[in-house]
Length: 483
Image (tube, rainbow, N blue to C red; front, top):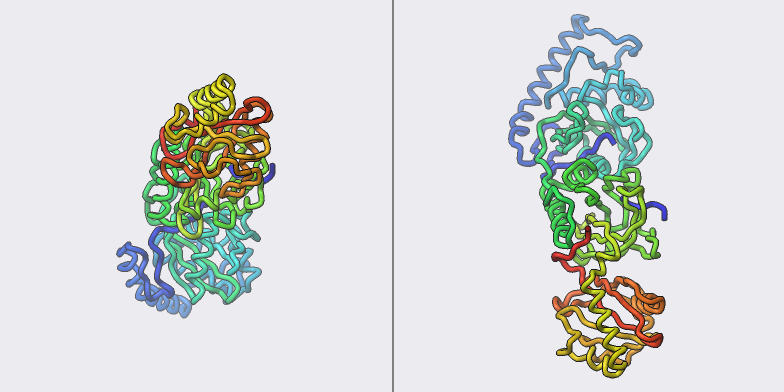
């Protein structure tokens, strides 16, 4: 199987978006300190301009070696750490472009030893299609369209500066603080209709992401809670911040072998902590080892509000050996969904109680004969009715012999029937039983909840002419998935 799901900078946006579009009208989220600070910006810049004019008039400015006369320069003695100097830094970069041209400017912006790299301050540049033009901290990104959290940052920041310039608050890994995620205020300017540039200053710690539990989820309920908690974090802090947190394999959304992954509704990966190189890859047409398009099932479940699925997937903790995996997926918003899964085994999916239930039904049929057994299996008050656990039976032509919750289906041929996800589950049950016993998963209505849910059934041959089986529904609960 190819393209299985399992840097340095992880940009991400705060929950509250900026509403400003110009330097003189600034309101950033709910942080009123930005408003107070930016009210002073125009006065500071005006004073700075007057000082520059005086210096120019007295000949006190110095031209950097190799810089053409008239080019905008950034003095190496200046340390840019405030919002005011952030604007000046970006303005000077824009002036450098106008004086020297795009090609030379991008070379300078990409130079980590150049005049536009000042510790936490550096210039990055993108075109309006999202392609990286300059990034001295991540030179490998140049020429590529950013994906995942980076893609959110680039797309939304570009929207801010399309009308000229603006501010964009986000969460970003600070290389000066061991790649810790911190809040960051960015400022950008449009150069022309094709590209823009920007920079940013770190403003403080970010609200920590707290997972549902530090322990690795091991039951269906714990798995669902783990994903629900991640969705709550994403809805509170915004898509960019969430994708950054989900992409961090040392973060709180990776618990042992269980981790949050994120995709959009076209099947493109947005966050994969163990396989970040696959972010941006489409999984829509990829099949697991059983031949099923598992991502399509996940998308359908997410669109319906959420649910479980069973598929076969490489385990990164075991040299990417393909194993059964039960995942729970759910939507975050109308642009993407998330999930997490627990690697498991057939012995856990089909527990001893279910195996014994099926074995007892087979023994009953062999002892009492087919007709008596089918009468008992179809009896809603019989000994083989245990709530949502019951016996069903088919002959090998695909005709229903026993289905206590659907008596109208008795005698109906369902050989070509499919479940809501399009799987030919009856054919799978017949093929598995003909080989002795088998585990089959599919979606059907749970009579206890009257909702369509994932069901794991265990089937067995009776006498070579017909088969029977029973199953468990993968609803949230205490069902153990991990030994």
